Amino acid sequence: MRARQSLLLTAIFVFCFSLPTFAQQTPAKPATAAQPDYLPLTVFYDLFADEGAAIAALKKIDAGWNNAYAAMLLDVIFFIPSRSTQEKTAALLEKASGLRYRNDLNPFYEWLWSMDPGQHPQYAEFKAAIYEGVDPRFREYFEKNPRSRIRLDEIRWGGVRRDGIPPLKNPKMIAATAATYLDDNNVIFGVAIDGDVRAYPKRILAWHEMVKDKIGGRELNGVYCTLCGAMILYDTTVNGVHYELGTSGFLYRSNKLMYDHATKSMWSTLTGEPVVGALVGKGIELPTLYVVTTTWKEWKTRHPNTLVLSLETGHDRNYGEGVAYYDYFATDRLMFNVPKLDKRLANKAEVLALRYGNEPLAIAADFLARNRVYQDRTGKTDFVVLTDASGANRVYEAANVKFASWDSDKTARDRAGQSWTVTESELTGANGQRLKRLAGHRSFWFGWSSQFPNTRLVK
Image 1: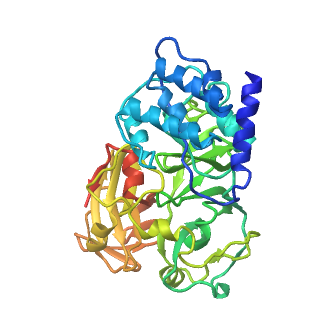
Image 2: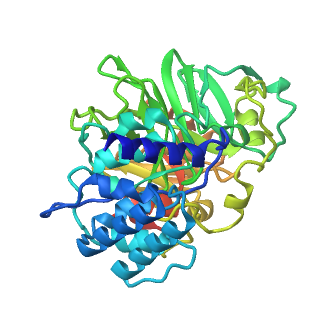
Image 3: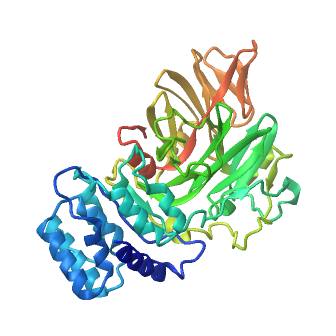
């Protein structure tokens, strides 16, 4: 078996040797199963052997077919060195699924995810062996049959090694007046925590997807999932424990999976919870803080003393507006498919994503642009969304206050005629009542709805 694994790893290393540090393409798949008499992993490793051994392996897989094997074949098909064996593997998937392979594996993934075929008892080890050939550190995610809150066959390789999309850690910040590289209409992610005000331009974060910074004296992570369009700000300290996070290299439903340096558990970007590994089931969830997606002009007008990311990141990138992921953002097509698309909105329509009390809610950004003051309730939380002229959304507690209007600047009014001062952290009434800012972030509709298929939508 060790000889077969060595052959497999050699083939994958050859395949991956020229992978760039920054990429974002190439699929790969997993599975689930729990039935009798599974074939040993050596049979699947033989797909990397000579033509005769590979054909014999495919015959064994066909004769003892279990739908759980589809995930294993999808994991390896692009790594198989023989073109002929690749084609025969695709033909076996066609036979099992009744689908036609037209140089597109996505229909096979969707077929697999439409059912629960169970999982080969050694599937996690198989996944560890396959992806160890891409990056030896990948083994740490899957070895020893880790606990998981998600299907392993939905975890796809994103085309990069661990931290191949390099996070920014304590990056250089400059004054707004020095940020001559930014145009007024450039998109930034604005953060204001305890008087510490910072702007993180999308044009920079699209290349790094994570910024680890100390803001307002707290260790915070801004995680930007370019594929799902979500920028979320997390406090990475829970119960006195700081979790040093990075980019795992894998995706779940086209959403970035993070990992922590200590245990190598994988974490969901959208929930801030461990989903695979030693930390699963420990009750850990990163606190979410508020962040606003707005324009540079709007942010610096509100906060002339803001700090902003410098172009001196220590990395050689073209940080021009719209350069990173230009083709991806230009269409409604996905780079990595998801089990099911919700057609109530276009895939990449932007929504304000809220999750209070485990009741997910999405509000279409276009709707909020037409309704600058919007009130609703989700879970046990009454809230109000104030949307300014740039289209930026800020969410606050509403309690029993009914708001009527705001001037898109510093003053909102309730239906009783009372004025409220609007700041990044709270609404303050004339009588001293305070309504705190709530966490919320933008997301592409498909990314949010595939993660939370039971989400309520306001449009």
